[in-house]
Figure 1: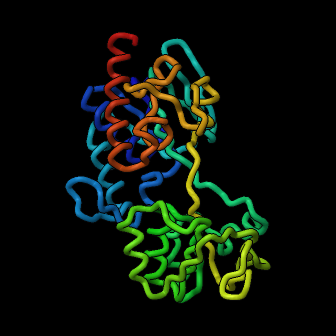
Figure 2: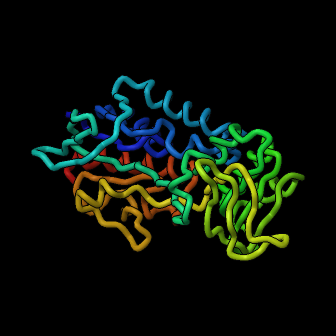
Length: 306
């Protein structure tokens, strides 16, 4: 039985693993995607000590640091369920295998939000994608749209503009909530067209994306012909596992934790984008901070039982 199982393979998870290892706790880090949402960041310019570093490279550094400790075991697997057992919890995986741990740290992050419009599901993977920074290369010389107004959308538009012929940045409001840094970056691109105060009502195509429809006309038409659609409209916290265990979530669906990252279930903690901590400010720095606090609380719990 491990002392702690950290569910997730992102910034908060690997940080927590570094700290639990330094506490000499037998640690299992397990999740489906190595690097988590961090690998979708094409450029990270706000991680202290790194003026600029690609997200995948930063997350590889996190992983290598965590795995440099003998106390840390690493597994890429989907956790299907968690059950209470004597002295801890049993994690059951999709492949039928299982592991046991005395404590759990949920660092499950978030899942990309979908638009829910006609054509989206049918054309997913056929021109519809949810990560512009990941998939922009496949649309070299094509016309594409990026939907959203946050950091991921505006950053994605800037990245896509480096390879695409034309990028339509479509946002339902007249201003962006993204960092001014990224807004300035995208405004420098000659091939980015701003389509503001518009909503996408349908994604068009027969077997492959051919365009999209807007709720209001843009340049004389409510249809834009293009080859790809990057949907970057935010994310929802991945809380299905903790909810099944009886962990409380807030009105936004985030895992409720106290200042020590403790949930309402004894021996269960949270860290990163999945929690309601750090004022919902989903950053590498806040995720790392929550990860180290959760690790400290898990260590304290194992020492004192609270």
